[in-house]
Image 1 (cartoon, rainbow, N blue to C red):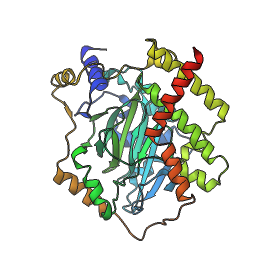
Image 2: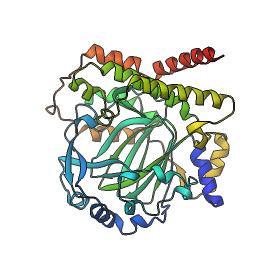
Image 3: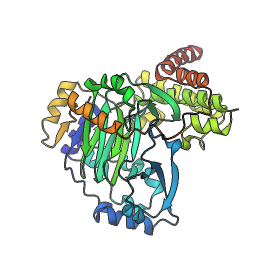
Image 4: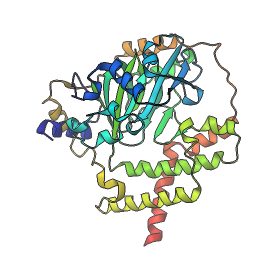
Length: 394
């Protein structure tokens, strides 16, 4: 790697705020024929029609959770012809190994200082209005490459007072209950209290967005879009890996003897096929506790051997590094006026008549699960568990 790539890596690992690299233009051959060529290659080398998530643009009573979506099969080239204001489509979270190799040919994150990151990158092909409900990723910091089209990113610092919830449960993601896609007018006062924490950026082709660890983000495609990202593993992730193991145990035991409807409500669709028995959970948990103990003693073991140290230089030094690049800037804070405009514009999507408010789960049961599995509660459990586990090993 050259000196420029090493400096970019320093910035990625140390920035405290989201940053944008404008017009970076990575020279990756898989995208050289544009989105049309990429989609043609995807179709030619895929034996079955692609499974796109499909969602009504008018569904607005809650955030547009994955459990509310249906699957629509079609070739990628047909997706490009899709033009429907009432529905959106998304080929979401497709790991690089799930796609034909020609669709990731020559992708190399070495230009950002992470030559191994392309091995686990993820692709997102979206129509207008496709969105990801506001959440933060429990692991890593995030490098997002916008290949085609435009996406809006609304971001909030980790300390922002959003209503964290593990329902729907997805390992490695903590969602919030605030609905930024189509907020109800009665939510305005609470949402406006977040204005001083809101950052926003529209990413365009060849832009690179860097999202620091645990920043909340709501993402929406403003037009047909293709992007990819990679989460950079960090040594501090061990804390969250232990917490996620605890949450997995709690959620799966809460739902073990419940109906299919409750399981589908509590768990994200991708988690329903990843349920494992308690013995396996505790094996994983024991390994993670050992890795944490090794890290505290100054050694990296297991998965931590390939994880990066994080925020090891101060904020002033990081800002000085940023000044060496004309095309790298911090994502700006939204003004109060712009934030109000965004919330009010999105609220126009709210439809009182859409959907049903009935739930398959008892309200008190849902509140109990949400409370016990909240990040704050799980952090206390983790610290107490490690203390007792470590004492038992002396």
